[in-house]
Each structure stands twice: as C-alpha cells, then as structure tokens.
Length: 241
Image (cartoon, rainbow, N blue to C red; front, top):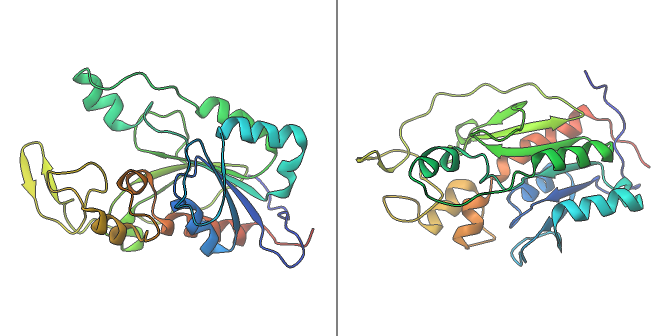
C-alpha cells in the first residue's frame, strides 16, 4: 500500500490540483470546496469554468508540464478523459444498432503520463468497458442528490476505503424500454422522453454556474470530488514547501 507523503503546497496557500479534461468545472468545484486551488485544462473553450483555465490538448499540456518540471507545482492530478470509447451506451446500444463513430481510447497514454508525474492521481469514468480500474465508485444517492450518475475512479499512488452504497429510493424518471417510470431521480443527459430540463439538471447535481446542457451532461456532481478531495487531504499530510 502506498504510504502517505507530504503534499506540495506554498506557505499560506492551498495545495494545487490540475484538472484535465475539465469541461465546465464540475469536478473542479468539488476539489475547490475540499480545499484545493484548481487549474482546469480542456480542448474546448469553457468560459463557464469558475477557476483558472487553459484551453489546450490535455495530454500535450501534461507532457509539457512534465518535460519542463512545472508539474512540481501541483499536489495531485484529476482527469476525466472522454468516455465515448468505453461507456456502456457506446459499446452497448449504439454498437448493436450501428450508431455513432469510432472513438479513440486515451486512457493508456494518459495513465503513462500520470505515472511519469510521480503525483497522486485520479482517472474518472462512467460504467462501461473503459480500461480503467474501479478503485472507487460513487453514486448520487451517497450524497442525497437528484441523480444517480454512477462513476468509477482509478486512484494512482493512493487509496481510500469504498463508502457504503445506499439503496436507491426508486427509479430514474423517464422512458426506458418502452415504459415510462416516475421516480426521485432525473436523467441528466439528452432531451425529451422525460429527461431532465436544464434547471432540473442544475438542481439535481448541485451545479449552478453553467446552464449549457452539454456541459451539464458531461459533468460529475461536485459532491463526488469534494468527498475525494477531503479524503485525499486527510490521507496526505499537509506541510509547507
């Protein structure tokens, strides 16, 4: 098991976390609430990201930080690489019906770069066949949210106990397999068929700073990364650099 080590931080400042494939900052907000200063990187412009943001290819940006030594300013790295190559919808329904297109799997290259940083890291993915370990998995019901949004996390260089998974309180509202069900949760993706409206997505996930449907659909609830970030700071002793 990896032994706790002091994390890097400047005197009087929050430890810094690099958030790759950051989208509009759903994960970043949770880490910020846990106590990190967050820098986001995404290939698309994200004006709704509430924190420091760089528009760039995430893998190239990380490789440059490693080559220059500037990666040493960070205490940890969170990543949410595109999931289409391995998510359940792509490899299941879409594949069986001949929908969609070929997607590139970035996780092997990303993992190699994360290993090269020498920093504790997180790779977040939805359920499916992505080549990422399920060292931790979280559900919206663990945080009393209006979404289930199960997500898996590969933890590099550190571990945390798996929290208990509470029983779901009912169905996700909407049509599924020709049946419309009512329930306490909404589906925060797509449109129509009983799926969540933008205001419902915002409320259910606890994300208020963007009203862009695509950004909300891609986001993970900040409660997830607030829990992860708090667990990280508890495990790793904080000392001044």
